[in-house]
Length: 330
Ligand code: APR
Image (cartoon, rainbow, N blue to C red; front, top):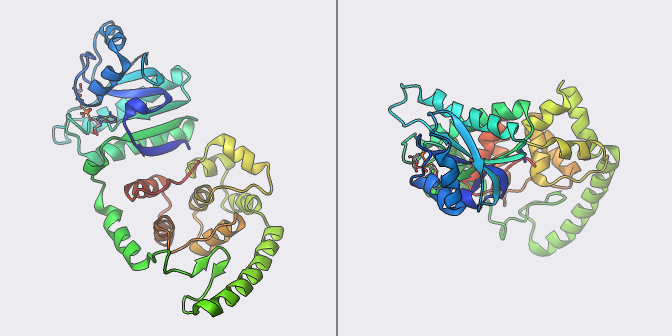
């Protein structure tokens, strides 16, 4: 998955390079800087001493030593002084220069902390938005697996832009799976059906739906619908898989296999990238062997965004992360 958000300690992340939110001396400090130096060992400090510091917005690279990564990219974020002292541009430069260094050193995977959002006081939601937008721009032109590592989610106060309305939408629609007998794999059964009748009805419904399902499947597979929709939308393959947060290798695998069976979050990621309606999304999911269910918060959140026609996968993943759900993409 080209871009993901995880809750973890960055010193535990196995990847080619982790980014350190350092200070201009590069001689260590508190927060993530302190954690990285402690985990890497004293050789990291010895190498940093030879770098003679780093300017705000710039980045420098060292070895990873005892960390589970090859490199540490040290960048110095801006101290938040109200937002009118070029903080946003400097923070963008931290991500851009760190990614440029990672690319120069042939890194295929990089992990970032939320730079400047701790001691340096950058409001977390704004720091998050700068990180996501800068990473998104980089991924439009480059192939790399980039992880944004959130250390203390409790204090990670995401914008209320969606979370309040989505929490309300979940409360209205979420049906605990022990009481919700409706949308099983093969389409909806009436919730009103009593248990014994439902057993018979379910069998018949499942048989009928299995017939439709197989017919549907024979008519057009998931891959065929995906490629047809890309053409209909006038998109290129690259535009589609990047917008879906899917890596190139996986897309090539899907494209070359008429009967490929994607994971649910992969199928939905493509539906979002293609900006499908709710019915078309359900149809595409059906071809991959899935259905949306009101006993799944993940599905309800997806349904919310599709119905609102909000197709920004980064924004959707931010909300899925906030609700501790799987992210879209692969
Ligand atoms: N893994 C991932 N993220 C972490 C970790 C960790 N082990 N420890 C802290 N963080 C998070 C914080 O929760 C915060 O969201 O990293 C983000 C950045 O916080 P800081 O580490 O305080 O970095 P910053 O705000 O950029 O301030 C840099 O702090 O530690 C000193 O030497 C550093 O002077 C520099 C200043």
